[in-house]
Length: 73
Image (cartoon, rainbow, N blue to C red; front, side, top):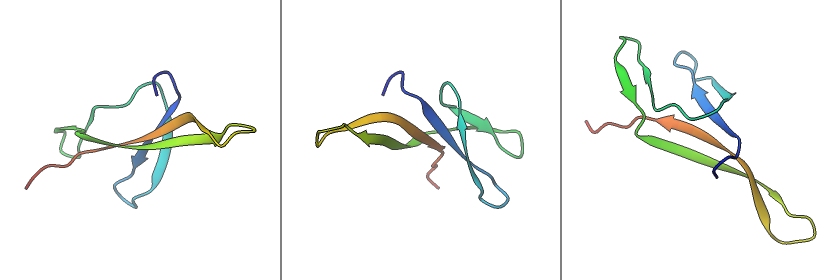
């Protein structure tokens, strides 16, 4: 999926709203409410496809990435 457009899915903390941010690259972490650094250690990928005309095949046209952090505990 190199060089294909991606959208990063961002979830808000207050109302769990979702928005998609089209940008170059995927974040590897964020600052939490207390100012601590949180590294993302999982990424959910949603592959976007479209049918190839006059074929049973599909082509990948982009993807969405939802970075997440899961810690044992």
